[in-house]
Length: 362
Ligand code: MRU
Image 1 (cartoon, rainbow, N blue to C red):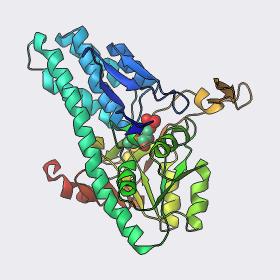
Image 2: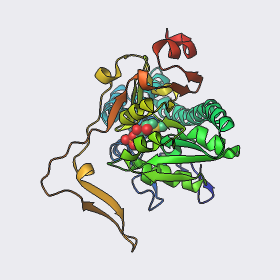
Image 3: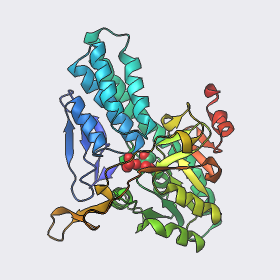
């Protein structure tokens, strides 16, 4: 998608072909900084510190991280070192393990001298595939928006949580893909953007990217969604996910579950957009089996923002010494999900619903 009229992906091969470059998302929306990933450690740190984030973008970065690790040491020991280092960066998004596995499959049978080239080729392919997947999800989700637009006058009001936008993928996004396609088609859209404490991915990333594309939107505090739904101001919720179980339980940014409960109570359709790479076919019960990342307490007790003079600073918002807990994700049970927007179509949020679209997983 575009920033200041220039097209970007979130990650791409560096011009010298020996590494990758990313948009440093920890610096958005105040600064647009391109950061190099020259080593396996650079890629691992970029994921840990959330210079890149969002399940598909984490997967793409892990794929480049595997390439960088293999370029550093193409032996089996080197491959294992890259797998181990990347696997421990963030626990919830299953795309991470998926991408590590894809690169491993692409190189394992090759002689050492051919591994780095093959790893880079597969990493680039994963990125291209991710864009195609986002487009397919967009087309399927667009039909849902069109159906609502046909029945009402005025804008279709869509609530989204966190950033499941193009910055969370390689391009286009998951939850935002149908929104961008609807906007391109001239359908009147308005997006309620949950700010998404503690890291504010909604306020700092989703609002930034919607604004850059001229999509009307309003940032709301995380607790406002229920009130808006009670007053008929939300037609549809669309969120992303970091790991969806084969039974349709959805792990996503903390607070998603509360939005789904409010949507259920107010008969607001609640959809989750996900690429097939985000389905964890090995588990069913999301509450018991999806690993929930716990991050540092300072993300809760501090906030970062820009002063009027332009300096970006971090300030304390809690009394010194107050303990804080920082659960980064929660699980929305399938029963609260109206449908799963996948790259193969919209599935009922159930094992049978997913298997109808992915029969090879039976
Ligand atoms: O902690 P983050 O910013 O990586 O969390 C991102 C989310 O929760 C997104 O909603 C999810 O990854 C889906 S992204 C297309």
